[in-house]
Image (tube, one colour):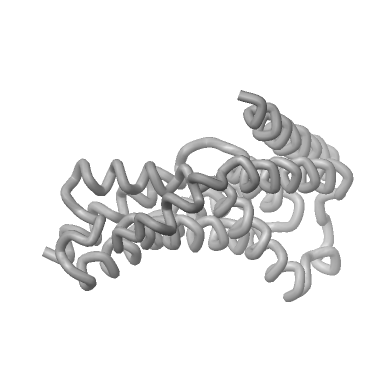
Length: 206
């Protein structure tokens, strides 16, 4: 039973992570600019946030979910501003072309925490997990604590697998580009990320 729940949750985590959005563009841009490790660590931050939101849905923590969804305007404001900041920073930062230009340990921690925080600024993700879990008969406290834990692990594993594949694929292609092309891709990613942030702010007026 637990294996079946894990596999279904893994597919859910993979599917949620694979949706093209600002996080995908950010991870691609970071992989292009700083290499596979930096991009993958950024993806781990997203996977962690997916796992946390999956835990809220799986354990049936409706009070937490309701609070976050109720405060989504403030959360979206912070997320939108941070996306614009990251977009501008990505736009102005040249991609690393030498090993000496790769990030330090502090840089990796910052990459992880920034994507973790950004992903957590989308509390509607909780509702997605609740709806999907209900549709396939898991989560919301059903099946006990063990089933909930297995569900969370499956979501995290699926999301991590996606970011591993995405950043790994981008890293392989990255080696074939000239520094000029790397700069173009990096700047394009910065513009797209900033645009996502602007749209997030505009959505607050609705």
